[in-house]
Image (cartoon, rainbow, N blue to C red; front, side, top):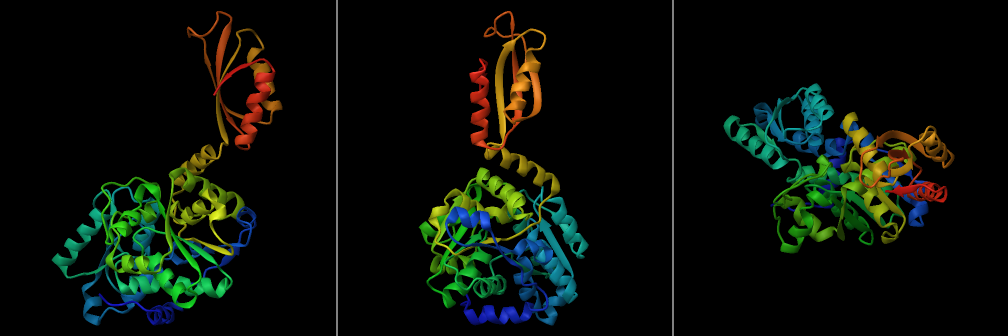
Length: 401
């Protein structure tokens, strides 16, 4: 296995200088207040194709021989790598086939096709799509472009690390969303070569966290199952190339829950005005989970922004629920004219917004002259929800959460 060096990353940067954009580094005042020092967002969600993947994909494809280019390329991806490979191939005039798992986000599929790639759905997880891509390569002679397990891919992703150090030279901690590990490996190698004092942290979705067990065993270990909304980092087996770099250069791997991912995505939309996919919000999720754990200045990488609008709506609702912005109550009221109106007046006075109302009149727990009202309310958060409940109880209502 070829050894990756800082010189490889620097050479990769020259290759992509006119292809990938230098994405903005935006200071986040609300995260800075939580952490107690400067926090910066590295906005790879604004990169071409909506993620960092164009960096590594273009480096890999640009180094193919004329014979390899003539045979075409094949890739496997849930969407971001697919778009990066498809765009790079379009630029270089290379025929492309991409295998995607069933259920891959529709915008990612459409964008991949728009760049000229043929898309084939195969399997329910990335590893099954990757096996199909390998078979296709063997049968047709196409060159397999692995999403993370190749030195050119890792070198290309490492160019983001050069930008981080140039844009935030005082950085002390860098948090990076992590799936197969290509981005984390490249950035960690780069930063540690230039600033070994900087703490580099990889962040995985708890439902698809292959690295903790793999690092504990000293080699890549496959997950038996995965379940996460963060399709961009849902990888069940680390690659040999990134694993070695992560083992040697990364200080810590953290995991975040689905609720944390939802809250982070919602917060980025509301506070930073940034649209990201769940995988792209992983670094911010780790910050929100334990802000005191990271020495500032902190850079949190927003690794991608390719999210289906339907999923965005679901995740926002999930994030609001996780943040205590929805409140479900069962309230007993007198079954008399005006009873419901008086209850809703109290709810309004408490500053809550009514989303749904339902009645339950048949229950052994109710007296003959009572009715149970089921309310779904929108509140400003957990503290406001408690205030609403307290107000209703002070007014004599029997409230069950």
